[in-house]
Image (cartoon, rainbow, N blue to C red; front, top):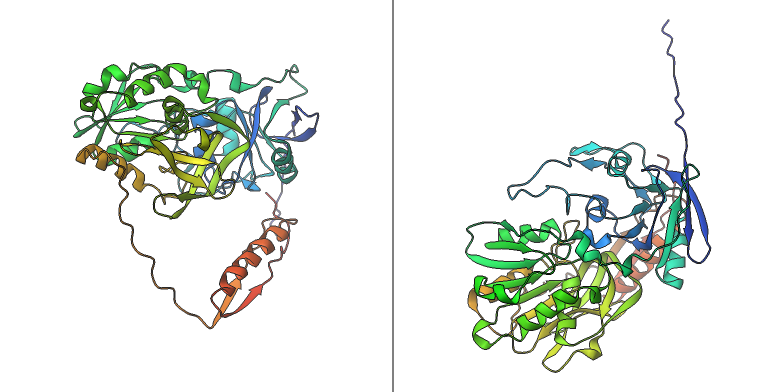
Length: 445
């Protein structure tokens, strides 16, 4: 007879208190560093990519709330392994920039062939708080109705802290490189990239297409360097774009350079806002911003719609664009600006992220558009001819299967998605059947 002895070790549960500036208080369980922090509370709707999001410099100063309920189940890959360009292989920068992470359900176990540690271990190693057990749906609805709010996370074992608005700091100066760096040395197309908080995959996208990237600080004398480059790139970054006065002044000189000195200019995210301000337009703070992996964007030139990843809290005001400039992209949800272009010069931007390390990759071709301008020296923006839409097959009957929620309380959202799918399918005059998605049991981790 064999006797098995089961020993259960209960780890100490540490509670974290989240307080919002409107007085709301939430209590959750700590799975990260136990230190008090403050910042702007925002939410992101991405289903995957927490390692990329946490290391995205655009999240500097922000307490990131993930709406997807299950977090940590695939762990964290190596934080030392680098690619052929010397960039960390699986991250967007060399550190976590988000102030803290909030989620509903943290998975204490993880499974992935590339995982080297748990999300909890990584957060503690980096000194970043993580709080689970939060009603993220209520949290998100509150932010959507009242706008992004200041918040703070406190622990009983530490001193209390006050609220602080990170947008009053020059966050770009905090995350930008302090020295000039080169990537893809020897490649034929010389691109000066202004680092306002650049994501590593942007560098990869440029270098893979034949660019030698000269990465410069946010306050670099850009105009004086025009003779040494074939094109100018302006990166993403955190905070209020009006804080970057030096960058805006330099860009103003770049876009007003004499004919023989003009170079193609491409900006992403904050780069869109900075180029717009340099052109004479104005920006505004969005109520709660656009952050996630599923934002629909309309191309005003071609009429195409792309599904894009985004991370921004400010937007360009379309009606303030001066003569010679026009809107290139528009958000199909809130109709905010998603990019601009010059009518006769090779300048254009995208508010979204075509490099999309966490996906989707629908708009990666924008890097080709930029570098084609560099190669061909065309003055007017030209988009590639995309493949024509294939003929839609006609089906008599379609069975639509719902995927089901991850936990009890989510069925309504999947029913909503199924209903919209049926509405679309009904336009093609076929018979349909929707199977109702029900949760068998709540998920436990």
